[in-house]
Image (cartoon, rainbow, N blue to C red; front, side, top):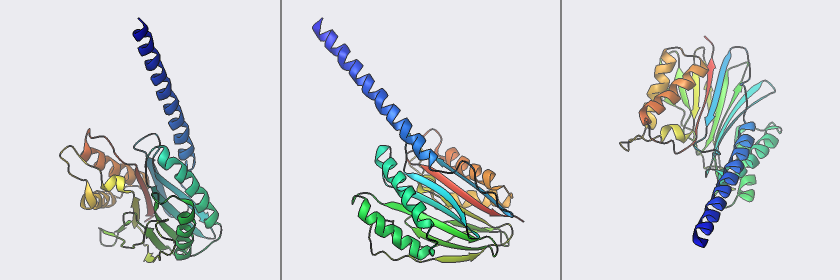
Amino acid sequence: MVQRVRRRERDQAREQLVRELEDELQTAYELQMGLMPAEPPQLEGLDIAGRCSPATHVGGDFFQYYSQDGKLSICMADVTGHAMAAAVPVMMFSGVLESEMKQGESLVDLFANLTQTLHKRLDKRTFVCFTMGSLDTDTRILRLANGGCPYPYHFRAATGEVAEVEVDGFPLGVSAEADYSMAEIQLEAGDRIVFCSDGIIEAWNARQEMFGYERTAAAIEQGCRQNLSASHLLNHLIGQAHAFTGETPQEDDQTVVVLAVAT
């Protein structure tokens, strides 16, 4: 009798702990989602869409848009870890990024300042993979920098082909002295830029096959050749990844942001 009572008390305590943890994760999830835009910016001649699908209640992915001084900036980050281990760094990074964006620095200087700040504030096991595109909305010149994220994909309407924009750099926070480079692209009518986190590329199916870079590029090219809108192209890419993985649980956050130039 006493053992049954004690067992019941342990079960009740365990259930209470689970409920409290779920409530905590839900609160953190809502905070994280609140850091990301509810709607994309509306700019003449441009079509923009973005979505983050966390693998758990709280993931490490994050994206944001900034519009200032005739420039549109698209930012995407992937913080190491999941659940609460990623939630706090994501929220901290969002604040640091917003503060740095107000300085109006070049992409190279922005990345250098971010990695210096994060190297001081993050523990040695935590870093931020970060990619950013800054578009001059008048000239349609896009400048790209990258620190550890998958390369952005560029669909050229003139050729009907997709290519990776190869720009490299260490993840933010790994080294205070890291150097960053920048790529520059002249976007033309019908062109598209697709940013995606490694949760898309590294999606696995039950046969232990990875969705991979080639399938990602092929899905983007197929959607672009169908002249899909930014939101439909986003859904097409995520849908192709999900069709590939089937019932296999999603192990990483999946984030996609699409920038399309009107024809």
